[in-house]
Length: 122
Image (cartoon, rainbow, N blue to C red; front, top):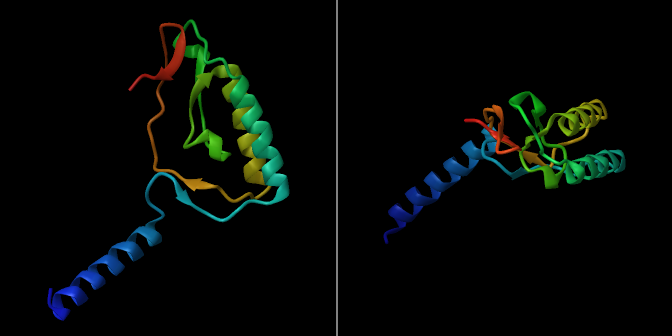
């Protein structure tokens, strides 16, 4: 490969990396580490999420939650009672000005009860 072609490829790769970094795109991009208070909130969030049953009888028994900890990924859907607790912890995390562990792409949440389990109806 010629030096000219190598230079073009290097420039293209550098431009792509810069564009991805600038937009904050992509599920799972790492960000800076949160403080001790943030770790404590995330631990409580993980405990609620681990105890979430995801059980339902109707679509109204299910709700969405946003991410707070690494274990929560980019959020999800579970039973409404657990999702409400997770939402409150998420608000506490936000008020504490915690940094997110991941940046997630938007997703459409459509809670649905399918065979007695909460999931996305989309």
